[in-house]
Length: 385
Image (cartoon, rainbow, N blue to C red; front, top):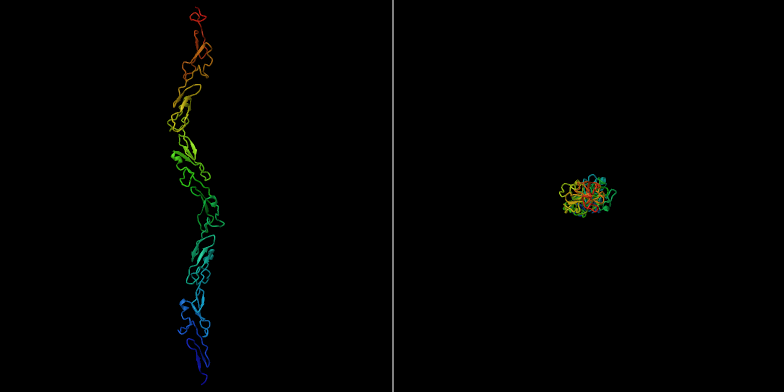
């Protein structure tokens, strides 16, 4: 029997042909024979990859490939593949660690810094400028400091141009237009979306930064401090005011206190006149109103009366013969008569008399006297010898 011989491929190849040379095949992914030095053996499987030999003819060796399993990507010839997966762009639902739009759906940028399949869940969501914020494998919490950033709702230089600080009460991106200008120490004041009106009570503030404040200037002098305008544009306008019964005011310094003992009505002033002069119809005068010069006021009698007394009502006198007044004698007493006021006290008026000059005799109250001369009884140029 002829032509019944066969050719059989030598291991590790496989194949057989009848009466002719066989076509030998080697599936380099399947053959585990140690004599196949070009075979994959466990190179792919050890890495969890799929092995494929695209051309199994024995003359085409070392063409097998390792292919990464989904959802990773990567193929290598005659070696384990380097598997990669961009967790930001991968849409395969089998990728349980992928972003799957978590960043994009929140208008954030996604970045996978290391796409090797051994480095999973390292992708990040980053907020888009001017917002800031980054989170790994999750949606980022975005913030926008409207005081520091540049945006349509941001403060810009509004606060800094006024030498004020800026505060964003809530930097969350869903809380915009909530920044405030804040006054610097020692001033107080804040305003939303605008320059603040800064104030400081220069009488109250003890802040070392307040170089214009009163601090203890007034209190050390036992005086009251008042700041009439607290605005930062009106500094050094505070006043020290002397406490009653003293009087005196000074701006931005301790006052020089005075006490007009004639004018003060405060009963705590034990040295004051309290009407002692006016009640007596007299004029009160305090020639030295210095707070340390007390008890020196005087009462002076109203004209035409005369008289002065210190710290008491004066003893007033009116000589109706020599003074000029409504009740005074004036020229009523003619030549040859003398005027006499027996009681010059200011409380004793209209008691003056005209008295005839000797040798005439006669007197009259508040009028010229009717003088008589008895030439028989007296001695005179015309009298009887």
